[in-house]
Image (cartoon, rainbow, N blue to C red; front, side, top):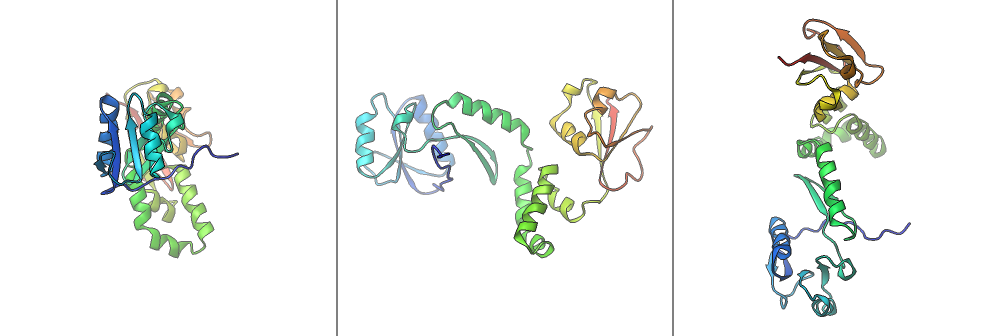
Length: 243
């Protein structure tokens, strides 16, 4: 299947980008370009990229293309050489969601859904993996084996302790949660993720079965009055109802 477009990330810091137009749409693009550090210039300047927000864009786009400029035309995908996706930013991680200009509303809705799924410290995860490259290369000299090890760790969790989990996968960890609701649908994203990957769940007797059922099927459920002094290898949870 042929790609409708090739997604790329372009570093615009200090580089000129033509912006033509006014009004709310043009201002929104201006703010985006400023966040990227671009030097915003007029129609006659030399640049590789241009954004056009104009009621009658056809002659403007034709003139820019004749100069070899790649153009994004607001609300006119037929006049776009490139499109601007909806963004999720977890510096240095940047996730882009695009529809080829077909539906900005759909791109925004997808961005909002993904925003809720991705942990807030995803950037810290990326930096941890970057800092650990020498150690990971030493531990897994073969690149394919190293990729599999990283992939397996990230499949468990995207949290920033990924390197520690890779190097000490059986190290004891105990997460403690005071549950604000007896309804499993009210679990926070972090609580739901922890339940899905915990090796054992220690809990007070009043924690509802419906919540315990959100734990993975082979996880031990252990009713007790206090958190364990020795949680055992892997990931353990302590659950109690908030007062």
